[in-house]
Image (cartoon, rainbow, N blue to C red; front, top):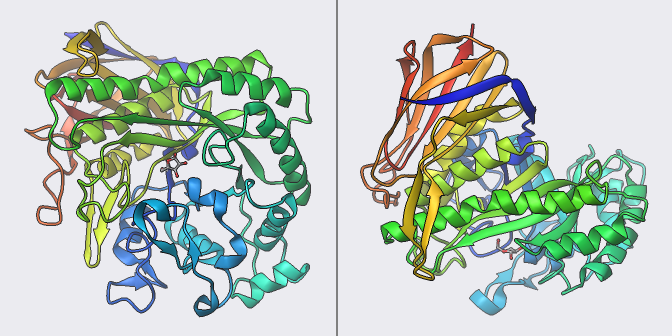
Length: 499
Ligand code: AHR
């Protein structure tokens, strides 16, 4: 029987809870009718925020929430989103060319922070460096973080109902500065970064800055940026990477080859992050720039969500998307010495989404259940794992007709509070895997908590009409013989006491 080894003496580092972060942009239905329904809505809400979503989100321990974009961040003036809501201006949203929607500014900084507090997440504000000056961003930090009663902005915050500082720790210095965020070269951005970082960190030396990094496999971005950054004061905590895997086929009606092709593209994130990391280390910057993969996920053609295309980028989410989330989170766990922040894009009514919502309807997607099953990893000590045999699955890449391969199994393990969490994804669409656990250096209890996300059809997804078609099942099981079965196209999470 295939053995899965858990090498407890071989610790890979601490899994930063920030790896399990989320992203909410003022885009399509993410904010409006997504997390926000408004105080006057008959949809149950907590000061305007959708109450059911708050409860369900809290249950998966979201560590961090990135806002207000994305591309939207680069035209956002934070002053538009404070003060009495009825007086706030309506602006042209970054995305209006796509969906003809305008930004009402009902959700601004105070509301965002309130939402983060409700769900127990650290706020991550992506600051606009394309169309705002360093002084504007200084003022935003001042508004958020200066103690009560000292500055004019701290007093304004108090007038707006929040005397206590927000203490926002994570600040992004631009977004996708190679694209929507200013169309810069890495050299130009490196100089801009140094300027903004100097002012921002001087305003509040306790904040952690996130530099805007590469688009996927653009390794030269990292190399050219680091060349200039390395000769500066090195004010940075994280350097970002955005990695989407895209399918040209249908989000819910795909072939077996399309299943494997997309999983294989998703798995490519490991090679990608390691190469970027090599450039960071190559310039001796590893202490200054851990990776923040603050946009990741599957990006399908539009129109498959419940709004039928009204909400820009809204897409359905099947067992394939859950599998992508599972294998990506395993990769992050196994590379926790390099990746400290990540944010799946995006939280609701959008790309690789955890929720779909409209009016009174709210459903969780298969991907939501992965975050629930994996939450035990947050803050755990990652442990090296290996199997005797990780079978290579052969498929025909639908994009180029070539024969391609992908390993059948993806897995990761961690230890926290004398408990082992082990997550295993079986990528095979039709063959189950029986594994014999081989813990090295520890003894496991006979009884374990097992969570499983599976379905007879790997195209399965949830709809407003059938909201629980795909959901994780949890049970207590006897694992004294060490044998675990992972059905085809499913994900298993095991939590067991170390005795
Ligand atoms: O997540 C959607 C968009 O994708 C974001 O606004 C942008 O940063 C990325 O290109």
